[in-house]
Image (tube, rainbow, N blue to C red; front, side, top):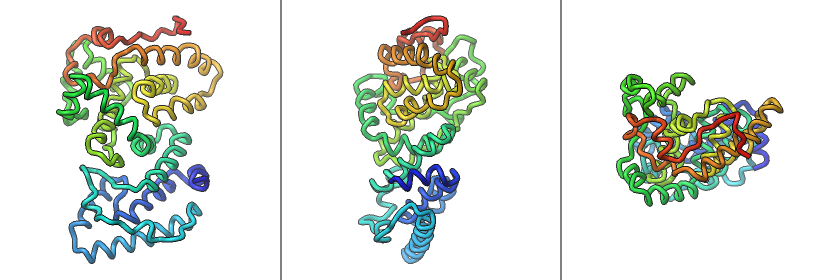
Length: 321
């Protein structure tokens, strides 16, 4: 694990990511994080058994070569990466799912954590970290949603938030002061698109994979409701809020280590004296935000929704300690 961590800082980000996912490819044909390779894998699995076995053998040799050259592992038994009681097809639980062992999840968690700390704007690494470390927290989130009528409806209907499911043009035409208009203005102001959220791949439970997907797609809605920009201070504050409400280890990592990225003493002082006390007070007193069916609230007054949820408006002039 130490060598993997060191590799995370020595190797280029693209190389580190390639090594991590070549490990998965060695056991599961040509599966990787990219959509193109997912499609290639499915075509491979639908081909003849002999072709699949030959391709798997080739990918295994390639992955082992890369891992040995990087010095990341001392592989005693190469069969550790290829032996499986079930075929990949039987293990795929939902679209985009990439089955992984506990060892592979641990490898991905360590590698993605290192890369997330090295470059906090690597959304792909942050997503991988969340999926490989979040099962326990996701079950708790699921229980909170099941205990709430609105949360239960979300889990039953499984709505998605992207440009295909939400009419962004309609939201832009809503009157100022409505929640939908505030959301689209936030996205435009920060040059963000709802399509930037990747699909879940490493959660080995279809229901929990949706919980993670939902959290990921409403993150910008949290920013909107909390009134937090996408600056480093704003992101850290939102991560503290989400860490307390969701318990996701990924949020904890961002909340604890994010402040190390602040470049000035004045920003750090603002974080400690204003942003963190405000985020903690908000998270503990507000309603659980993942229980809000946002798609049914677009026309609602922004301020009315914030009051309903018990959110406190941030004010730099107001002391929160």
